[in-house]
Length: 188
Image (cartoon, rainbow, N blue to C red; front, side):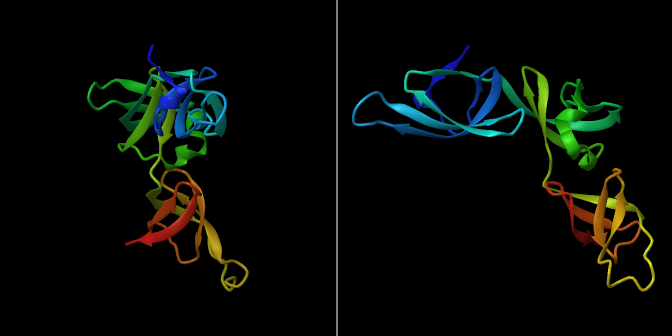
């Protein structure tokens, strides 16, 4: 078991705090005129994404988390799980849908994604900020209704439904921001 003192923590280091994995965002060592030195540490929970700030004495220890970031190939979905494969070992890894939350609708089969494993269990799937998807269905436009409606809904090849401008048609390839789920542009 590898441990670090709170004064040796640095940004990017992954540690265990309260039996959960965290990544260190920042560490500020404070040496007051009187008393013992301490560290103000900002930690981000890798399971929930929540940012916390903690103060540790300079003699406190934190255990290093067994975190691995690896690129895995997305294969397919099976009810509650998404199946990824390690291209080197051909080992398949199951990722539960609650880990992906609503990001599952941006997954493209046969594409590589950065998957974070904690004790060999997936805890996070890194998504690209933008994805290009094909429009497979759009709501029909009502003739003369261009003033009240400036957008319409489109169904994409992954099953996601997004608002798009009126000029988007079926079979168009559009760029989507996966962080907000919003239309960005039409691709040529």
